[in-house]
Every structure is written in structure tokens, then in C-alpha cells.
Length: 303
Length: 229
Image (cartoon, rainbow over all chains, first blue to last red; front, side, top):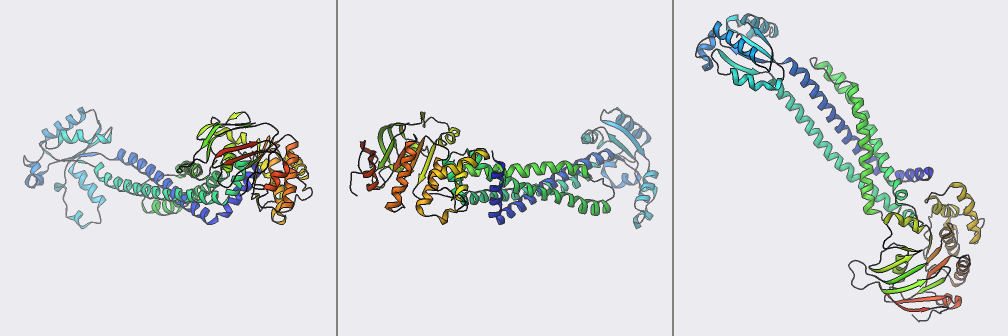
């Protein structure tokens, strides 16, 4: 193997197809940046899920005097001390329950006043209008159904609410965005592959004289094909490098300088996650074009 | 060296076979003319020897190997023992004479030291000593064909295949090329040359194989061109 010879062949090939090479680089960069972005978004969602699911609880709201008049779930009247004791005992018997907190109407009132102190509604509320509730922390937050079936409709219980449901809306939105990113990535990747196929075809055609002679004098098919494959791989690698840069810049501008400042509650993924995604992006950037080139050559370069 | 056992070749989507039931044997060191009108099967014959095509029926043996059974990845090694020359020279216009010859060695991975030593030697042999740095475009047709022969011969092949090597050259230049091929033949290399050049065939008095519509119609040692066209 004469390295210098192969290198000069590659340089000539890339220069000869400069516009096509640029197109390949750009489309590979965009598709891989989207791939990396989708992977990072996935990690973000997972870490947020872990974080928030730890915090959220199932709330069992108990009937107060107001509810007894307006809510059909409470038509048996406000909750009694006996009912409360039974509910608490039953909750503690369940395996899936990790901990049970009791929130009195006064505590709920204080909490509400604190959270919505700017709202005009807060001043018109009285502690009697608030509900007592049991806050249940589950060992596995997905086991909400167990609580719901056991306590919904029970005397004294107004509603069983899974707070996870509130978050799931957010997560399904993020999931949707991730799927959209993957879909666009798929399209861009197809575009990139088609461009590579075309580039390799043009390259093979413009060098048919050389390859014809190589064939006649008995160069191995590997030797004939490797400049074309490396050409595609190098263009892909440059695209991959750009994709990596885009990811770092995206993390810096979009996440660190924008989202992290606007949304304080969420802990965003760090650079360690970015560094882990970049090698994958580079590997795909090199291997996909090389494979596309190899398959194209089987068709367009008779060996 | 070469043996055809009732070889036929039909190209895809064609009814008439390009070669029909051809059997012959060419010994090591022979000089063979392959004659016949256009479309008689000369090129197909050469392509079968080069294993650019495979026989539809029968067996082609080259250098002791059954080409029908030679696996795909061994073909390049087989071709390294063959040299090929064409009517249109097929030189690389952007490489010098020396680089064109060296190219044949580079792409089969020969070490640089050997290339540097062999290329001037073979250029001397074909009578182009000292023209190593010239571009093909600066040379006459005869000289370009000599470069092509140098490239075909630089790896010291057992067999040299020439497809109408004098087809683009004037008679006087052709004689020079024929002398060169004859000299290569005398080093022990088998030469097969397809040609339309009656004068050359009649002068050389070598073995003549004539094809007509894909059939072998004449195989004559010390033969002449033999037909008018």
C-alpha cells in the first residue's frame, strides 16, 4: 500500500468535486447535528423525568363542607375523623407506598397564599374553602393506578390526582419535538446519502481512465476503491466535525445562555453528555458515507 | 499458456454468439496474430483471456488457471502476469512518460526503490531512454505506443496482449512497433496481437488465427493475412 499515492488521489478527487463535496459536508453536518440534538434531548427528558418523578406525588383530596354541597363525589358529606384514620391506615398497608404526608386545610391555605400571593383570588379565599389531603409518595411513580382504583369513589374522598399527569403533557411535547428532530434528521441523512452516491458516481466517472488502467495492470479492487471510499469518509468526517461544533455552540447559546437563565427549576444536561454524543456523531459521519460510497462503487466501478 | 476448450460467448440480450465453439492452444513463447473482420470475435477472444468477460460455455485456461473457476478476488493477481496494449494507447495525459509507466507498478504496491530502478530500464528497452520527463501529448503516436508497451511490459508479464497496436500508426512507425514486440517476444514473453494490418502479418510470418463470425476458421503456423476486406 502506497499511502502517498492514495492521499494524492484523494486530494485530487475532493478538489475536482469541490461543490459536491461542500454539499455533502453541509448535509452531513446538519443531519448529524440533528441526530446529536435528538440524543441530547432524549437524555434531557430522561434526567428530567427522574428528577421530577421523584418529587411528584399522588394527592388524595378529601371532601370539605363546601364540596359536600356541590361535588357529587362528596354527597355523603364532609370527611369524618374515622374515615381519615381508615384511609391513612389503608394507605400505609399498600406495598407501593413509600411515605404518606398529611396536609391540613390550614397548611394548604398557607401554601396557596405563598404560591399565589400576587393573585387577587388568594385574598378572597378562607382556610375553610381549602381541602385536606393525603400526599402519597410512591416507590415507583408509574404505579399510580393502584392508588386510584383503591381510593377513588371512597367515602370522604373527593379526588385522586396523579401529579405526574401534569408533567406528562410537558414530556410528550418534548418527545414530539425529539421525534420531529429525528424525522428531519432522517430526511437530511437520505439527502446526504444521495449526494454521496452522486458524488462518488461523478468521481468514478471522471477517473475512469485511471481506474481502467489500474484494473488492467492488476491493482486489487481494494486499492482501486479505497480513494473513493476515503474521499466520502473524509467529507463525512468534516461534516461530523461541523455537527460537533454545532452541538457545542447550541449547548453554549441555547441551553447555557438562554434556557438555563429563563427556566431555573430544571437542571440541564452538562457538557459531559455533549462530549459523549460527539464521538458517536463522528463515527456515524465517517462510516455512513464510507458505506454509501462502497455500495455505489459496486455498481458504478467494475472491478 | 492459453487453452480454449470449445468456448462460446453470448453477450446478454444478443442472439448471435460473439464466439462459437472455439478450441485452440497457445504455447509459451509463441507469437500469434489474431485476424478477422470487425465483429468476428477478436475482441471477445482477448476479453476472455483478460477475464473481463467469462465464457458462456467451455473453458478458458490462462497461465494454467481455469478462468471460469478463478475467484473474483484472485483476478487482479492473474492480470499482473499479463500486459495489455491498445490501439488508443490509453496513457494518462496529466502524467509524464515516467509516471505513466511507474503508475502500473505503484498501483500494485511495488516498493519505490524498485520502481525508480525499473522504469528507466524499460523505457530504454522500448527506445525512449531519456524521455522520462516528457508529457504524452508531446510525443508522436509511435512514441506514445512505445510508452504504453513499456507500461505493459514493466512488470515482466508472461503474456502480452496487443489489440490492434498499430491501428493508429503509419506503416513506417508500425514496423518499429512490430520490431519492439518481436524483441519482447524473444525475451520469452508470449504475444497475442489482434490486427487488421495485412502487410505486417505477411511480413512477420508468425502463427495466424483467423476468426469469422465467432468461429475459428484458420489456424496456420507461419501464416499470412489471407483474406481481402
